[in-house]
Image (tube, rainbow, N blue to C red; front, side):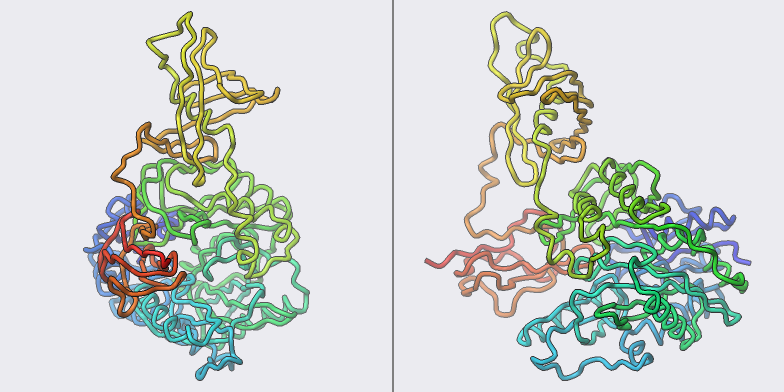
Length: 617
């Protein structure tokens, strides 16, 4: 019987596993890097062991340190979570060799399926070797791991070699394995998967389907169960193939078999030999705890006869600290407030006041809604996200709400090209036009010009803000009756204090909740930056300056790039790595590189000057 579990992971999944362990009366052990010393997963565990260092390569990818931590803390079992070493057969063997229980599949099953090249060969599918123009587009894909890292779509043969190099480097950093392969890229298909459970007594149970078609950079954003609109015959075929894949490798535990559905056919993608990020939607529909099932299977128990009945529909949205309008760039900083109203499930590795760092995935939380129908589940989830208080760095919250309400998605006509087609409309800035006024009124609460109201009318006060890249000016005046809006037709101030402003807008009273953190102001769902009265002239940069869009590490500079090198608009100049993803920084114009300020291995902060390109006449 398992009495103590170490989770060889961090963040949301570690907190998720700990929750089930507490329910089962099992003691919990966390591991944490130096960057995660005060992270939520380290705080909520019964014990925590330090992994010296900050980067994944020095900490969460060090199997020897993880096994030593489990033995030191007196754990008798290890749960790998997802990502990092969760699909590493060598780590699984090391855990077992140390006399610990491995809450996962046998190492030989991981070896057979965790490498996507061997998995495809097992299913009778061979990767591409000599790629020609006729094969395009193709997908370069990491053989180990997942989450969209180490993946590149190649549409031009001349780009293949460079994308292979970039994918290998990204895969090695994320998973400790730089092996990649090439396969045909099926465009605009649906990503459908099957959750399976298998015990040590030969039972393999498929637990319905999930649709995970809404993806950015090949990483899932919105998932749901069951996959809507699948023909009965195709649904049955997919489940049968999933069981076949699990039995072929003697699978044990929880796993997921993934397919791309196009033209009425299911194309096998891979088998993930671990728990998936999107497992809560299956839990909601079937009324089970998959982590508890994993633990029971690891203890040698049999699965109950027959799967539990499915109930209703569940949808999950991944809340990321990222800016979808700026090439999905990850964001860092203090998460001042995270509160999502019910009735939804919130799985997160953060709480108010936590820091979002540069070393790890930018996912803040998963928000899950379950309802009798798909329509109601979508409506519940969109409403909860819309009313959530998320104060801190930029997030994809608005994108999620608009996606959940998009007619193509509500009609279940989506595919993996959804964001390629609709991203501009989904990220179109739509700040509330009265949010800057509400922020200014809240800021003015308790203050008045020259100490109070005067008989002689005073000049209006002004405050300037930036929202979604646009500058706004709010004007107000102190009067005998209180604060009064200036220059806005049809708007009357009903109430104003530091936290709540009520405006009468053309006869309709509207409430504005205001929260301020330094120069950052959140008014309902609109994020504002208060501008100083007098801009700092030192903050100006020369035309053509390339600034770091995020904090990160310079991992590569284009070959031969030095001051004086001619460049073309859109040409990649250097690569930044942040939150386990690589981001290209390209030339803004055609011209000459006049200044290069960084080198590989250098850490940069947001807004740091990277290079300058002078436009050609």
